[in-house]
Length: 190
Image (cartoon, rainbow, N blue to C red; front, side):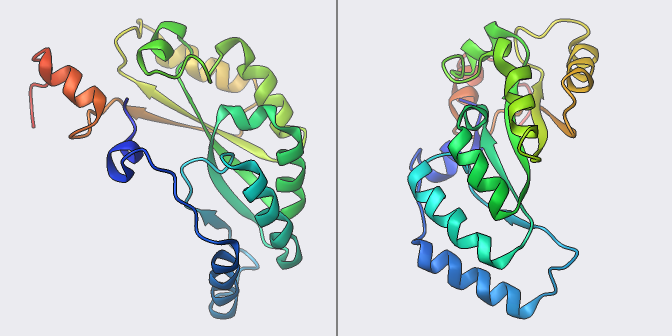
């Protein structure tokens, strides 16, 4: 309910044909020296449509290029996908953990996918494939308590995440959270 992708893309997940992605990649490789660069796959969740992604990653192997992408925490449970990702050059996954509070996960409609009690195991599993983890978190949720930042950063260190990015909850216009906050007169500035 907070995600800008849902607003921008109307909750539809679109995929380019693999041949088109490979052609784009070849064009990039012709124009740029990628010896010291990373490719960032602009994908709202690189773990969605795993059979499609496995085929894509198999094709990436021959290019020997390092890449990073965004994914939900569910990817940390898919060993088959993680194995081929690592082999194809994946160096880091930006993963939407969002919060360490189960009540907040319920309010974000993510409690079915994100299980706080599994976070450490997920990070450990992803890192076992030599893929780094950048945890994405949101502060300013209704159930956040005093010390949320301290607890989150302690957790990040404890589970050995490679990086963490924190966003302040922002009710993007026309998102579900925007409409909820607007209805309750909680948006004080536009």
